[in-house]
Amino acid sequence: MTTIKKINDKNILGAVKVLKAGDLVCFPTETVYGLGADATNNLAVAKIFNAKNRPSFNPIIVHVSSKKMVERLGILTSLSEKIIDAFCPGPLTIILERKKDSGLSDLLNAGLKTTAFRIPDNTVAIKLLKNFKKPIAAPSANKSGYLSPTKAEHVYEQFKNNEDIPIILDDGRTKVGLESTVVYEENNNIKILRHGGISKELLEDSLKIKIIEGNKNTKFSKDLISPGMLNKHYAPKVPLRINAIHKKNDEILLGFGPDYEEPNLSKKGNLVEAAANLFSFLSIYEKKGKKIAIAPIPNNGIGRAINDRIVRASSSSSR
Image (cartoon, rainbow, N blue to C red; front, side, top):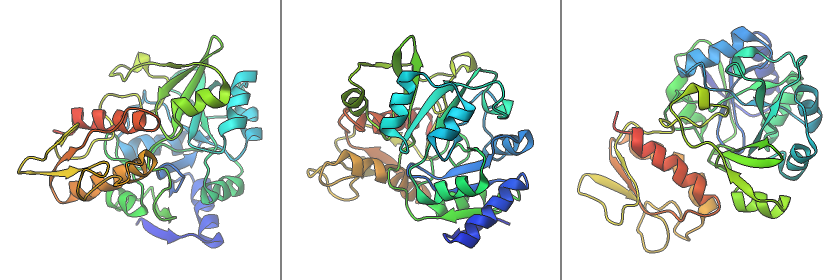
């Protein structure tokens, strides 16, 4: 039976025991809630794929507590080390060639030599990782292709009857509300493979290099080196229309900016606020069975990540 637990030392240690037993724990990060397993345990990682109904060719991010743990598991270059120093902990995932003696489950990597690593910027996640003393494999805690959870309640609604997931650690609503930005170094260039909580502009300003747009969204396993690249992703169960100026009679319109009434992703036109609200708002109106329309979102900064999510959601939400 899955239960939601308050954040305290006792419950974090309880979650550690669950991970050591080879079962799954849902835990908060600054982006969205993660569905965690021992990243060195093949059977535990297999339970993630089973619980989410996740394609086996879709890689899983490995969460670690520190740069030192990244160095123990993956091969750092001077450029990748610069990225980690600048943005970790935080909503950024970096894909690295993993070490042969990493001990990581082969199921995480879809047959590739690379692994996606992230240091979350959330005190509960870091406490969990430090007490577990091993890396935790954790995609978003939702069924594959559905909305990513920004609250513990969202997780519970999808997994409450899963006996492999006894604990959900409840830290309230997540701060960022969108998944992490995923980057990959290739031939001394940095590619963004998934837009997320850190914008392309922020990366370029900090690193003083031009960031390249990486692989487009894909249906094919051979193109998939990063989580979050499938075309069919992040979708509600109701029809979704984007770039809507006015709502139709059978729709709810999610506005953006001062020209729109409530509900509004950000009345101030703040993209960070809109990102934090996006999945939560979609979840609310999905439950009400309402068709959803979303006002135009500027395609700059974190707005690129918002548009990435709603474009894919609109293409697959008619199921």
